[in-house]
Image 1 (tube, one colour):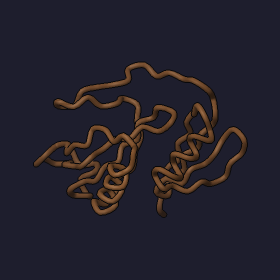
Image 2 (image 1 turned 90 degrees about the vertical axis):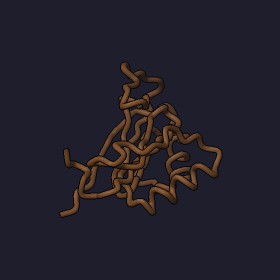
Image 3 (image 1 turned 135 degrees about the horizontal axis):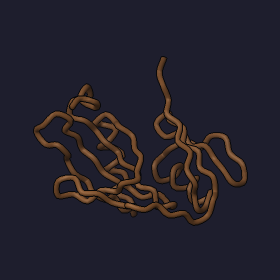
Image 4 (image 1 turned 90 degrees about the horizontal axis):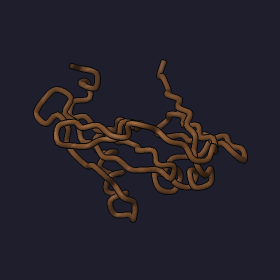
Length: 137
């Protein structure tokens, strides 16, 4: 059985959220109503509900010399898909942040970049050098 992930999050504006995921990231919209929507992000279900402003404490942490967002979610992609999305976003007017290789020459080496959605959520896209090392320590 292939397992799919579901994550439900508040959003500031449902229309801006739908537009970002569909038109910037190329995800498809699923079920929706006036104040909520499902997004198909690489065959995983994100549900956004319009809730207005919200706040999260402890927004960052440090890994090596890189400051990273504490609160983020993401997708692990094959290197070809990662490169295609990175190049698409880099050539657009979207701000891609923190493009870096983590754990260089170690177990778990991976490429990573972040992009912010209209709600302030950081989305990380990763591509592991060796896919079998996703959970290896």
